[in-house]
Image 1 (cartoon, rainbow, N blue to C red):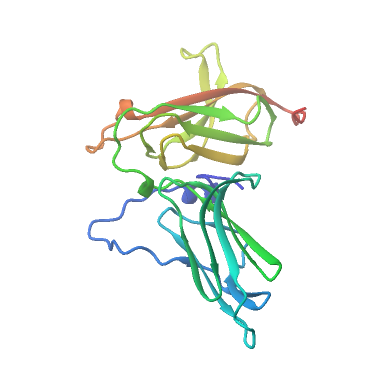
Image 2: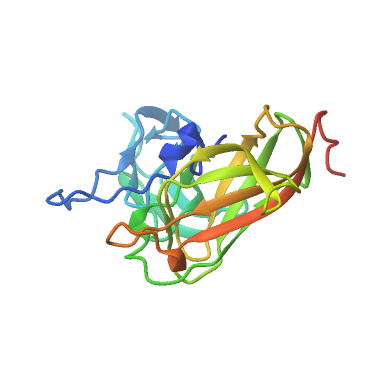
Length: 269
């Protein structure tokens, strides 16, 4: 899935951090809840129709459960909400509870962007859903100081139009905010004073990367208009201060180099 922020042009919206307007309600949003009733043993669980969800750190997730008509009411459903790796390995259990009837509710931790899995088991049956949590402004307070970071590419050689993954990591102890930056594809150019000239740009995005967290563009296609050659990918993440003036101390420029070939690059060994 493309991420114009963590996600896609669908990315851009996913990572968008938006401050609440003055006078906006401070009431928490209602929990995210499924719409599909599924049967697990003697229980009816209101589950999610889609295999994956995308929520913000202000969201809660709720799953109602009740005994089926005529059931004894003694069977329990066990719910687990855990942070996991992309491969599905459990890193930390956030919430776990067993219920005969009622509603299981889990809250995404602060500064908790990443991948989670919500699982329910009952009567020998199991259902699970993946929950993606993109970075959001609610994870961070005001910008507090200098930031550092890195940009990494999933490979060093790629063919035109082929997808790559780009990871921007915030390696500092401060939140990395950014306003309308973009990725630049710069080709090696001996005639340029900097040794590079911009050949393509995009996508643009905005939001925040919490301390020691990462922003990932996955399956991002190499611009098909690029001539074959040696390039560097540049992420310029500018930060404006309260007066709307560019603040270099809180901004980041990160680069990584890559060779672009006219033919599809060989698969990594």
